[in-house]
Length: 162
Image 1 (cartoon, rainbow, N blue to C red):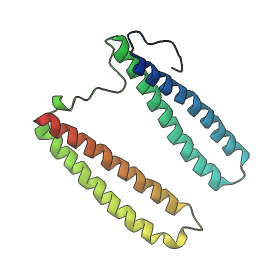
Image 2: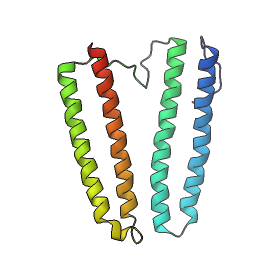
Image 3: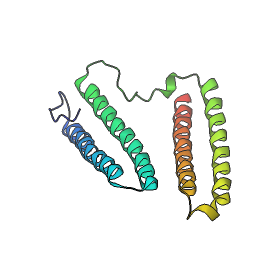
Image 4: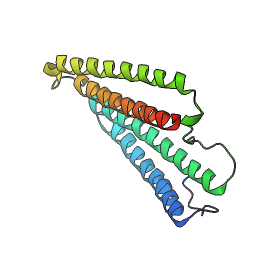
């Protein structure tokens, strides 16, 4: 997907966006190699563990950029293929079912947010002797991301409900 072939029917801004997306994929690939080299170069199991977490994130980012670029290509070329990143079709959902589901999921994430905050507090005495506190902090950030995704879905479901 790292090709730089022109997009059929693309505007100049769409061409720039495609170039940016595919260029970022190439840069991310180089970063992945560096991270993998770092794992092999360290005798620290803690460092290797943390870098492997970074590798997982970078692989997910790499996949998202590939999906964005492929979706842009589908959009500009009018191929009719289903885009990897779906269109915003919240208006097609059964709002009476979807909005309560989103609210339940948000409530669960907020409970998780509260529990993780408590756990981080309980682990404060171990923050300089274990990796546990940084892992809980990362889970807190993931929970914040989950809440942001659900709020986005709620906002767009409500908007399309009008």
